[in-house]
Amino acid sequence: MEIVHVYTKLRGEFGRQCLFSDRPAELMVDIPADPSLALQFIQKTPRDQALQACRDMSEHQVNTERFESESCGINHVQGGWPKDVDPEEMEQTIRFRKKVEKDESYVNSILQLGSVMEHCIRQNNAVDIYQEYFEKEEEVEESQEPPSAKTINIFRDPNEVKRTVTGLSWHPDCGRKLAAAYSCLDFQKTNKDMSLDSYIWDVENPNRPEMTLKPASPLVCLDYNPKDSHTLVGGSYNGQIAYWDTRRGSQPVELSSLEQSHRDPVYKIIWLQSKTGTDAFSASTDGQVLWWDVRKLNEPTERLVLDPGREGNLDRALGAISLEFEPTMPTKFMVGTEQGVVVSCNRKAKTPSEKIVCTYDGHHGPVYALQRNPFFPKNFLTVGDWTARIWSEDIKESSIMWTKYQMSYLMDACWSPVRPSVFFTVKTDGVLDVWDVLFKQNEPTLRLKVCDKALYSLRVQDNGRLVACGSKQGEATLLEICSGLSTIQKNEKSLLAAMFERETKREKILEARQREIRLKERSRSEQSREEEAGRGDGEESPDQLIARAEKDFYSLVETELRRREDETQQEKGVCEEKEVKDEAETSETLQ
Image (cartoon, rainbow, N blue to C red; front, side, top):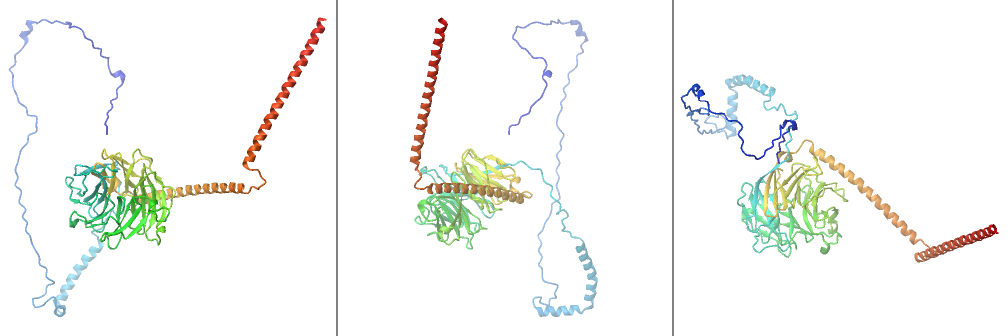
């Protein structure tokens, strides 16, 4: 931020303007020495004195009394039983109890201790020492700090040839580890010296990766298993699916065969909600969505072709580039395609044609990111071309909210896991945008320049405080978001629910209006067709009508020409008669 301080002063207070010029030296005053004044001077003896301009300090040593500690242990034995009574033998304990209860001293002791115990019980019931006195009072709202974010660490690709960070995944348990997939997605730009490895980083140590993953082909995406933090699954550039167990080393435990895998790079893979915790499904630009059991990757357990005609034709299939699966909706999933269409699917449908439920068309380019709102699953976020859009499942014609077109391409986006109204986007100009739709919709709440290279991937930690961004230069930047953007606000869920409902109603009204206009146009076109079809054989054809119109036109032209000729002739006759009369009058006057 540029800091500027402005001084204000009136022009009249500036004083006279200084005019400088070069000129030779000039003697103004010459005062000669006066010897008589020397008698008045008194010579003073010089004296040197030193001063120290600092505070006096003193140093003291104190030897405090040493604190001594010792370890003690207590061996607790049940009750105060006599030595001849075994507390584990029920008969002996019952016999001893009956014997003690008959003793008069026992009864007197109980009567004396009963009043003391009763007093303590009454005291405990009267005063609750754990009572919270101010729990019902509203918390005083702290002053709202401006939105901010700071860089915590930068994890750089340790290889000489840098690769794009195409995928990120947080460790599910503690979030202290970050898995990053590295590959080059530029067509035919792969270098023979380019490494195939991907890495798992410790967020506290950016100098060296904690573990190296060694796939057969560069990883485009990878995902931690939410049920088992030691296992990961990744999608490769050559279409294969790889499965790792970090306890068993860097090599993949299972690898799918090339014949049964995708034909194009696997752009997204997600773990499914299952009892075994070993099911996942993947999407690729070859137009297929494949389901896998990582315990046996010989072939996929299920296959879906994204043919919009619902015929299963792979040649006409839409290339998948993003996936969305919500565990609360185990039968539904969504696919973002290269053609800008979002396909909503139902896995439990009986026939393949019924698995594709509907489509949402709203982007001019590939849908790079697709995610449901964690608090409102009916609303989902998409990113493609230069905009981010928020959709409702009920509205298929258009999105209910969208950002204005940005100057750079948007590559990834995701919702905040703790704040319903906040989502993050990254762009090819290296900028991270944080949007709060409750605060403002026209521009992001926070815009942060992360790096000079394009940002390709984005992932938010489960606590919503840490954000990881992957760049084209192979850098994974870890940022910490301020508490205002990572702490849920008062009434935020209800306000956002009202906003989504209002925008959904508005879009429904507009959709109904557009449908009504289309129906009117269709009925008008059908009516005109019926009129054309209802013409009899005796009516003239269009060619005949044109010929007749031309004939009528030319006949009108000829009639107009004749009329004008008649008028000119009549004018000439009148002029000649007038000339004859003038000549006759002239001759009479002469005579």
